[in-house]
Image (cartoon, rainbow, N blue to C red; front, side, top):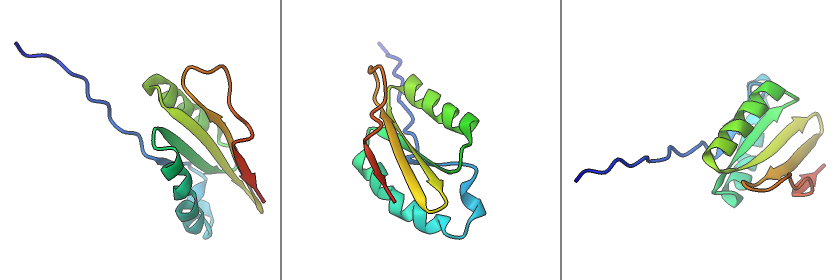
Length: 101
């Protein structure tokens, strides 16, 4: 008797936002932030320059629908904002997951 199985499609470990291609340094940022994707193999790391909130919300919604964790990373001038980290089944994100200047 055949059974239907649904095979989940893995999300990109590092989802790159629409603002990343505008700056020459972004290739170096992508390489550096790949480490975060390695630290969160069960989730998606969404990286963008600035605040493209519609894009960010769509990545978050995809993660929620698939039951994956979601880490938001934003590049802003001379600083990088890391977090919050959202985990499935929790009421909120962990804003202090990481950060640096």
